[in-house]
Image (spheres, rainbow, N blue to C red):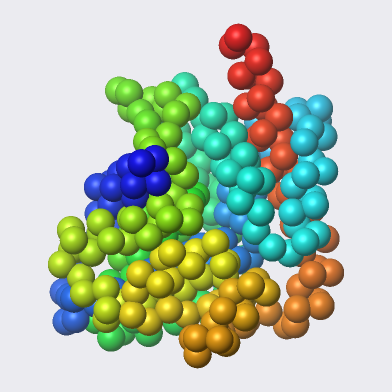
Length: 281
Protein backbone atom coordinates (compact mmCIF):
# COMPACT_ATOMS: atom_id res chain seq x y z
CA UNK A 1 0.00 0.00 0.00
CA UNK A 2 2.80 2.46 0.87
CA UNK A 3 4.59 1.70 -2.42
CA UNK A 4 1.36 2.23 -4.36
CA UNK A 5 0.69 5.52 -2.55
CA UNK A 6 4.26 6.69 -3.24
CA UNK A 7 3.88 5.92 -6.94
CA UNK A 8 0.53 7.67 -7.19
CA UNK A 9 1.87 10.69 -5.30
CA UNK A 10 4.89 10.92 -7.59
CA UNK A 11 2.73 10.81 -10.71
CA UNK A 12 0.27 13.32 -9.27
CA UNK A 13 3.11 15.73 -8.51
CA UNK A 14 4.68 15.27 -11.94
CA UNK A 15 4.32 18.06 -14.47
CA UNK A 16 6.28 18.60 -17.67
CA UNK A 17 9.06 21.10 -17.12
CA UNK A 18 7.93 22.97 -20.20
CA UNK A 19 5.12 22.52 -22.69
CA UNK A 20 6.56 21.39 -25.98
CA UNK A 21 5.30 19.67 -29.08
CA UNK A 22 5.83 15.92 -28.82
CA UNK A 23 5.72 14.20 -32.24
CA UNK A 24 5.56 10.77 -30.58
CA UNK A 25 3.21 11.36 -27.64
CA UNK A 26 2.59 7.71 -26.79
CA UNK A 27 6.22 6.78 -26.07
CA UNK A 28 8.59 7.89 -23.31
CA UNK A 29 11.88 6.98 -21.67
CA UNK A 30 12.35 6.63 -17.92
CA UNK A 31 15.79 7.08 -16.34
CA UNK A 32 16.95 6.19 -12.87
CA UNK A 33 19.31 8.83 -11.45
CA UNK A 34 21.88 7.43 -9.00
CA UNK A 35 24.78 5.68 -10.79
CA UNK A 36 22.68 5.67 -13.98
CA UNK A 37 22.62 9.36 -14.85
CA UNK A 38 24.89 10.76 -12.15
CA UNK A 39 28.03 9.29 -10.57
CA UNK A 40 27.19 8.20 -7.04
CA UNK A 41 24.04 8.97 -5.08
CA UNK A 42 22.46 12.37 -5.61
CA UNK A 43 21.33 12.63 -1.98
CA UNK A 44 24.93 12.23 -0.81
CA UNK A 45 26.06 15.03 -3.09
CA UNK A 46 23.24 17.13 -1.71
CA UNK A 47 24.38 16.32 1.82
CA UNK A 48 27.92 17.37 0.90
CA UNK A 49 26.51 20.69 -0.24
CA UNK A 50 24.71 21.11 3.07
CA UNK A 51 27.94 20.33 4.92
CA UNK A 52 29.80 22.91 2.84
CA UNK A 53 27.21 25.43 3.98
CA UNK A 54 27.97 24.46 7.60
CA UNK A 55 24.58 22.92 8.25
CA UNK A 56 26.35 19.94 9.86
CA UNK A 57 28.84 19.97 12.73
CA UNK A 58 32.03 17.90 12.85
CA UNK A 59 30.36 15.61 15.39
CA UNK A 60 27.50 15.06 12.94
CA UNK A 61 30.02 14.22 10.22
CA UNK A 62 31.41 11.31 12.22
CA UNK A 63 28.09 9.71 13.12
CA UNK A 64 26.93 6.60 11.28
CA UNK A 65 29.70 6.98 8.68
CA UNK A 66 30.90 3.37 8.68
CA UNK A 67 27.69 1.93 7.31
CA UNK A 68 27.69 4.38 4.42
CA UNK A 69 31.37 3.79 3.64
CA UNK A 70 30.65 0.05 3.57
CA UNK A 71 27.92 0.73 1.01
CA UNK A 72 30.41 2.57 -1.19
CA UNK A 73 33.10 -0.08 -0.85
CA UNK A 74 30.73 -2.78 -2.05
CA UNK A 75 29.98 -0.74 -5.16
CA UNK A 76 26.33 -1.84 -5.06
CA UNK A 77 23.13 -0.32 -3.78
CA UNK A 78 21.96 -1.49 -0.36
CA UNK A 79 18.26 -0.71 -0.01
CA UNK A 80 18.39 -0.38 3.79
CA UNK A 81 21.26 2.12 3.74
CA UNK A 82 19.74 4.12 0.88
CA UNK A 83 16.40 4.19 2.66
CA UNK A 84 17.97 5.33 5.93
CA UNK A 85 19.99 8.10 4.32
CA UNK A 86 17.13 9.46 2.25
CA UNK A 87 14.53 9.33 4.98
CA UNK A 88 17.01 11.02 7.30
CA UNK A 89 17.67 13.73 4.73
CA UNK A 90 13.94 14.38 4.52
CA UNK A 91 13.73 14.46 8.31
CA UNK A 92 16.53 17.02 8.32
CA UNK A 93 14.45 19.49 6.29
CA UNK A 94 11.42 19.18 8.56
CA UNK A 95 10.26 22.68 9.44
CA UNK A 96 12.02 24.24 6.47
CA UNK A 97 10.11 25.88 3.64
CA UNK A 98 9.78 24.37 0.17
CA UNK A 99 11.16 27.60 -1.26
CA UNK A 100 14.31 27.30 0.87
CA UNK A 101 14.90 23.69 -0.15
CA UNK A 102 14.42 24.40 -3.85
CA UNK A 103 16.93 27.24 -3.62
CA UNK A 104 19.44 24.93 -1.89
CA UNK A 105 18.86 22.25 -4.53
CA UNK A 106 19.62 24.69 -7.32
CA UNK A 107 22.82 25.91 -5.68
CA UNK A 108 24.07 22.45 -4.76
CA UNK A 109 23.31 20.92 -8.16
CA UNK A 110 25.42 23.58 -9.86
CA UNK A 111 28.17 23.28 -7.25
CA UNK A 112 28.34 19.52 -6.58
CA UNK A 113 26.44 17.57 -9.24
CA UNK A 114 26.67 19.19 -12.65
CA UNK A 115 30.14 17.77 -13.35
CA UNK A 116 29.10 14.26 -12.24
CA UNK A 117 26.60 13.60 -15.01
CA UNK A 118 27.39 10.57 -17.15
CA UNK A 119 27.57 12.11 -20.63
CA UNK A 120 26.83 8.76 -22.23
CA UNK A 121 23.57 8.45 -20.31
CA UNK A 122 22.60 12.00 -21.12
CA UNK A 123 23.19 11.23 -24.80
CA UNK A 124 20.78 8.31 -24.53
CA UNK A 125 18.17 10.63 -23.02
CA UNK A 126 18.70 13.23 -25.73
CA UNK A 127 18.14 10.61 -28.43
CA UNK A 128 14.66 10.02 -27.05
CA UNK A 129 13.99 13.76 -26.98
CA UNK A 130 15.23 14.05 -30.57
CA UNK A 131 12.81 11.25 -31.49
CA UNK A 132 9.99 13.37 -30.10
CA UNK A 133 9.45 11.35 -26.94
CA UNK A 134 9.12 12.44 -23.33
CA UNK A 135 12.03 11.73 -20.97
CA UNK A 136 11.34 11.40 -17.24
CA UNK A 137 13.65 10.82 -14.30
CA UNK A 138 12.39 8.21 -11.82
CA UNK A 139 14.24 8.29 -8.51
CA UNK A 140 13.99 7.85 -4.76
CA UNK A 141 15.64 11.26 -4.45
CA UNK A 142 13.28 14.00 -3.18
CA UNK A 143 11.24 15.27 -6.11
CA UNK A 144 12.44 18.85 -5.60
CA UNK A 145 16.05 17.83 -6.31
CA UNK A 146 14.98 15.49 -9.13
CA UNK A 147 13.14 18.36 -10.83
CA UNK A 148 16.23 20.55 -10.68
CA UNK A 149 18.33 17.81 -12.32
CA UNK A 150 15.69 17.30 -15.01
CA UNK A 151 15.38 21.02 -15.67
CA UNK A 152 19.14 21.56 -15.87
CA UNK A 153 19.43 18.72 -18.41
CA UNK A 154 16.49 19.86 -20.51
CA UNK A 155 14.39 16.75 -19.86
CA UNK A 156 10.62 16.52 -19.61
CA UNK A 157 10.23 16.13 -15.85
CA UNK A 158 10.82 13.97 -12.81
CA UNK A 159 9.12 11.41 -10.63
CA UNK A 160 10.62 11.43 -7.14
CA UNK A 161 9.92 10.85 -3.48
CA UNK A 162 7.21 13.23 -2.32
CA UNK A 163 7.52 14.80 1.11
CA UNK A 164 4.46 16.01 2.95
CA UNK A 165 4.06 19.76 3.32
CA UNK A 166 1.71 22.01 5.23
CA UNK A 167 1.40 25.66 4.22
CA UNK A 168 4.61 25.43 2.20
CA UNK A 169 6.63 23.88 5.06
CA UNK A 170 7.89 20.30 5.30
CA UNK A 171 6.43 18.15 8.05
CA UNK A 172 9.29 15.62 7.94
CA UNK A 173 6.99 12.84 6.75
CA UNK A 174 6.73 11.14 3.36
CA UNK A 175 3.63 10.69 1.25
CA UNK A 176 3.55 6.92 1.16
CA UNK A 177 7.06 5.51 0.95
CA UNK A 178 10.33 6.22 -0.79
CA UNK A 179 10.03 5.94 -4.57
CA UNK A 180 12.11 2.78 -4.66
CA UNK A 181 11.71 -0.68 -6.18
CA UNK A 182 8.01 -1.49 -6.79
CA UNK A 183 7.04 2.12 -6.07
CA UNK A 184 8.97 3.25 -9.15
CA UNK A 185 7.02 0.83 -11.31
CA UNK A 186 3.80 2.13 -9.79
CA UNK A 187 4.80 5.71 -10.56
CA UNK A 188 5.59 4.83 -14.17
CA UNK A 189 2.24 3.09 -14.62
CA UNK A 190 0.39 6.00 -13.00
CA UNK A 191 2.19 8.52 -15.22
CA UNK A 192 1.43 6.38 -18.28
CA UNK A 193 -2.28 6.61 -17.47
CA UNK A 194 -1.99 10.34 -16.90
CA UNK A 195 -0.03 11.03 -20.10
CA UNK A 196 -1.64 8.40 -22.34
CA UNK A 197 1.59 6.44 -22.82
CA UNK A 198 1.84 2.99 -24.36
CA UNK A 199 4.23 1.23 -22.00
CA UNK A 200 5.04 -1.43 -24.58
CA UNK A 201 6.65 1.35 -26.63
CA UNK A 202 8.44 2.95 -23.68
CA UNK A 203 12.04 2.46 -22.53
CA UNK A 204 13.59 2.41 -19.06
CA UNK A 205 17.22 2.71 -17.95
CA UNK A 206 18.78 1.75 -14.61
CA UNK A 207 21.98 0.50 -12.99
CA UNK A 208 20.32 -1.53 -10.24
CA UNK A 209 18.68 -4.93 -9.98
CA UNK A 210 16.39 -3.28 -7.42
CA UNK A 211 14.79 -1.44 -10.34
CA UNK A 212 13.72 -4.64 -12.05
CA UNK A 213 10.02 -3.84 -11.39
CA UNK A 214 10.36 -0.60 -13.38
CA UNK A 215 12.51 -2.17 -16.09
CA UNK A 216 10.03 -4.98 -16.69
CA UNK A 217 7.09 -2.56 -16.80
CA UNK A 218 8.18 -1.18 -20.17
CA UNK A 219 8.75 -2.80 -23.53
CA UNK A 220 12.37 -1.69 -23.91
CA UNK A 221 14.50 -2.10 -20.74
CA UNK A 222 18.17 -1.11 -20.69
CA UNK A 223 20.95 -1.68 -18.15
CA UNK A 224 23.30 1.27 -17.57
CA UNK A 225 26.50 0.88 -15.52
CA UNK A 226 24.80 -2.22 -14.10
CA UNK A 227 25.49 -3.98 -10.83
CA UNK A 228 26.38 -7.65 -11.13
CA UNK A 229 22.87 -9.02 -10.70
CA UNK A 230 21.38 -6.65 -13.26
CA UNK A 231 24.17 -7.33 -15.73
CA UNK A 232 23.50 -11.07 -15.47
CA UNK A 233 19.76 -10.56 -15.88
CA UNK A 234 20.25 -8.26 -18.86
CA UNK A 235 22.50 -10.77 -20.61
CA UNK A 236 20.07 -13.60 -19.92
CA UNK A 237 17.19 -11.63 -21.44
CA UNK A 238 19.17 -9.94 -24.25
CA UNK A 239 18.68 -6.42 -22.92
CA UNK A 240 21.01 -3.69 -24.16
CA UNK A 241 23.83 -2.95 -21.70
CA UNK A 242 25.51 0.47 -21.63
CA UNK A 243 28.58 0.85 -19.44
CA UNK A 244 30.16 4.29 -19.31
CA UNK A 245 32.65 3.41 -16.57
CA UNK A 246 36.32 2.84 -17.40
CA UNK A 247 36.14 -0.66 -15.95
CA UNK A 248 34.64 -2.55 -13.03
CA UNK A 249 37.92 -2.84 -11.13
CA UNK A 250 38.70 0.85 -11.54
CA UNK A 251 35.17 1.76 -10.48
CA UNK A 252 35.32 -0.35 -7.33
CA UNK A 253 38.59 1.25 -6.31
CA UNK A 254 37.68 4.80 -7.28
CA UNK A 255 34.22 5.03 -5.76
CA UNK A 256 35.23 5.15 -2.10
CA UNK A 257 37.95 7.71 -2.77
CA UNK A 258 35.76 9.93 -4.92
CA UNK A 259 32.64 9.60 -2.83
CA UNK A 260 34.05 9.10 0.63
CA UNK A 261 33.01 12.55 1.78
CA UNK A 262 29.54 12.04 0.35
CA UNK A 263 29.24 8.71 2.10
CA UNK A 264 30.36 10.29 5.35
CA UNK A 265 27.81 13.06 5.05
CA UNK A 266 25.14 10.58 4.02
CA UNK A 267 25.67 8.93 7.37
CA UNK A 268 25.41 12.31 9.02
CA UNK A 269 21.84 12.74 7.92
CA UNK A 270 20.95 9.51 9.67
CA UNK A 271 22.68 10.71 12.81
CA UNK A 272 20.89 14.03 12.81
CA UNK A 273 17.52 12.41 12.24
CA UNK A 274 18.01 9.77 14.90
CA UNK A 275 19.15 12.34 17.42
CA UNK A 276 16.05 14.41 16.69
CA UNK A 277 13.87 11.32 16.93
CA UNK A 278 15.19 10.42 20.37
CA UNK A 279 14.99 14.00 21.61
CA UNK A 280 11.35 14.11 20.58
CA UNK A 281 10.44 11.11 22.72
